Image 1 (tube, rainbow, N blue to C red):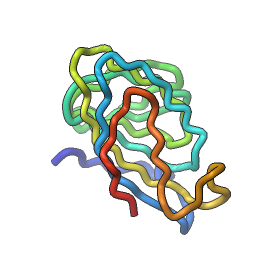
Image 2 (tube, rainbow, N blue to C red):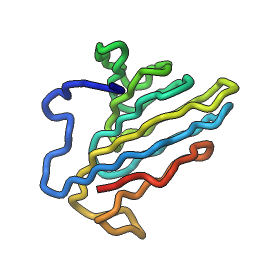
Image 3 (spheres, helix red, strand yellow):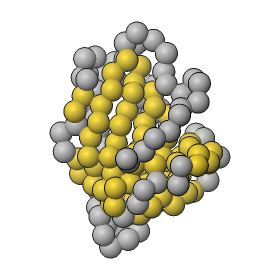
Image 4 (cartoon, rainbow, N blue to C red):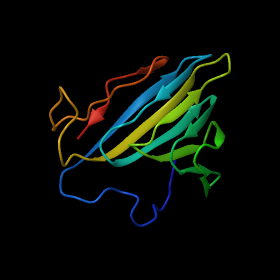
Length: 143
């Protein structure tokens, strides 16, 4: 089993226009990138399949490690290794660093509130997956 976690109340967005997506992401070695998520509210989860990287977020995030959940305060960096998972608000800006020499393999999952107005140039019905420089992804499975 990759991850089993009971999400605290209020973690998932409310509403009747929810969308979810699952995708495989690779962080290239030596990248430093910023994920400036000014996006729709929701939950973003990354599980580290292989490798290690560091994250610093502009919102509190949760790290799941060895079955325990720890909250990481705004602006505090955290190292994630194989088997760790990150739970973050989709709308939070995140700085990511893979300082290693090997790629990092992630499984990403999102549950988003598609209510309101979509980002410029987009329409609801499909999750818009935009990744920063140094991220590679297969086509996500979106529902």
